[in-house]
Length: 201
Image (cartoon, rainbow, N blue to C red; front, top):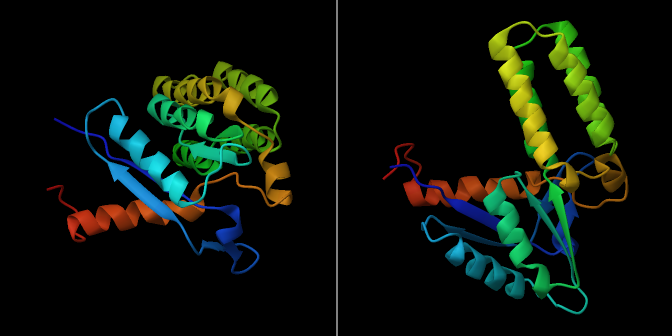
C-alpha cells in the first residue's frame, strides 16, 4: 500500500537572502513532515507549530502559502487562515513549469512554441487567456495519448485557476511565487529518513 509524505517549510521573508541575480537562500526556516494517514491532522498541527516558531501573529501576519495544487495541500493552507491576518494562496510556479516541461518532452517544436504561449499568459496573470489557448491547441491534436496529456494539464490549471496570480509582477516586486527555495528541504528530510538509500524502508 502506498502512502503519502507531506512536507512543509515555513520561513519569514526577512530570512530570504539574495546570493546573486538568480539565486536566493533561506537563512532561517522550520520544516515539518508527516506520513500518517490521519486526514492531515498531524501535519496541520506541525505546520501551525512551525508558523508559531517563525513568529506568526494573527493580528499582523500576511501568510503566503504556495502548494503544488493538490486538494489536501489547500486544506492545510486554509487551516492556517484563522492564525493570520490575511492568507494568500498561490499555485506554485515551480509545479506549473514542471508540468509544462514534462509535456514539452513529448511534443514537436511547433507544439512547444504554442505551449510556451500558454505559459506566457499564465506567467503574466492572464490565466483565462492561457486556458482558452490550451483548448484551441487540444482541438488540433489527433494523437490520443498527447490529447489526454494536454487535457490533464488543462484540468490541473482550471482546478487551480483561482490560486493563479500574476507571477511576473510578484517576481518584480520581490514577493514569493515559487517554492524553489524550499524544495531542498524535501530532499533533506527524505534523505535523512532514508540515509541516502533510494529504497523506501
